[in-house]
Length: 370
Image (tube, rainbow, N blue to C red):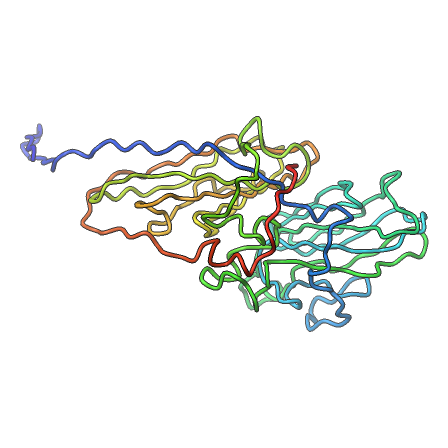
């Protein structure tokens, strides 16, 4: 102990010194695409068929269309949602109009037969939008099956007793303009198994959503990513166009006992014109969501216990670009809130990882990056 007299006649004491701790650099990322559903040939036979024609959301009825496309009515209560609408084209179709209810600051992107149509998003005061998507030239498959795809960011349910607290999530209205064509079938996918049959009962069904990478368990430790390619979510990498890539890396902390070092993940904001969304997973647990042009959160706590001190950590990110120009993260690093002496004993939280759930998930396949 070092005791020092101050100019005021008082004394300060320092109990030893703290060792210098260098946090690991996040590198050696593996990446796979995570939106195979935009391919019109994608097999969605195991998706839920959205065939209800009535809703118990009497306060917010369906605005247009002959099907109810509210996710809660099909057992999906959180996470990203994927809708696939099928129709046989006559060649007269000019546009597709949809009203999507995603929650405040939510958003969605749309494709027709694999061709990107555009994206729309809300604000802190807007929870749904209505958009008309023109059918691009040479996109229709006349006389054959055509597939309109929406990926929607589910922003959770408003926890109030007002009318807004009873909002559904999903598509409130849809119509094809031009000719007399209607959608013959809608398929819907949220988290694997929905609320009733989620494979990860330990973390819970709200921990993950409907992204392909989430459904196959790529956010979990020990997921086999050897067939994935090297890539980076940072500047120079990311997503080249509209769509979703999923990234994984590992790191080791090597923090000695007797020290408490609160650690957070810091995201450096990109230009506000860069329109992208990120979900953050630590050892299989979703710990945050970052929306670049809405914000303002850029620091995400990596909770002690879930953050492993005695074994390897797995960090996973979904990177969703809502624009055809693509997107990347300007900066990503681990930061510390300080180094403190402690008598607390830290124990790595033991949870069922990929191996324990593999038999309950689809067979994992590498998807070409976007």
